[in-house]
Length: 411
Image (tube, rainbow, N blue to C red):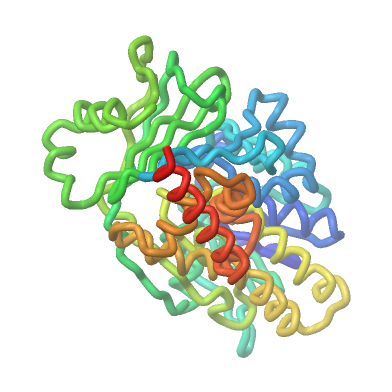
């Protein structure tokens, strides 16, 4: 068995792993970026292909924004249809990016591989952790050809997704919350929207649907029916998928549309929250630490964000040869706003009717720009949940709704 020594071993070379590796390599560390696929163009299929605005600063920092736009990626904004009407944020609201993972994943993986100090190791999966006298001291790998190698490192980063092998090997505790919605996605050409190129979401409780303009003139259409609707979808997936989209108020015009991909989806997509530091010398990032509801489209954005938080937290300690405990505690503190959002998403994944708070805030956002901006910040995860719950925000929403009711009565 061959052996190699690095500062950090990152297992998983998708968004979270590649971003972590790139930032650590640029900081001056030696990083092994390990990917089980042999193909450097491998990508995730089950995705909204929508990166929320919360990730835009990270994307700009690593220089991926220019590559995304050169590849035809679309600066996205999000209009939301609610039972009370459309919530349309101002045009200058913070933007994210929409680009298919078939372009994005190889792009960010290549960026990491070209970073100083990063070695991209393709075609190997983690099979065990190396014991280092009370702490994990690396990871044992097995290649698709059966060969084995050991990667010794002070820190092992599990960036290997929702079904993380690193988390399992490290004995990570996890909390699993049920998801009553089932995601289905497909790519289309020739879709016409009422939003002049902005992304749209329909909150047609208890289900959710999306229209997401993407690169190369494609539009990702998605619908997330509840599990009670699964028999209809299983009986005739394509008809049920299109019927749902055609029934949406102000929905996408599909008269000239053509589906150019399979309809991909999942009949069960639970929400998983794991301890981010499951063992000494091991840390989890991206979906390995927190797998949220695809109906919320947060996965890509949180992968970029959490990778930056992790790299910025641990790099100074690793470079200075200091213990990692304080650095990893800092990483956990930086993740707290994300966990607040995840708590709200867990509640919404139950597919229950809108709460009184939802009715208050979304009802006001239809008529009030300030409340619409707040909703946009919550949807794009650019602001903590407490801002949505602040007394002055709820008081303004109550005032707007009361004023609207008086206007309706007068009319």
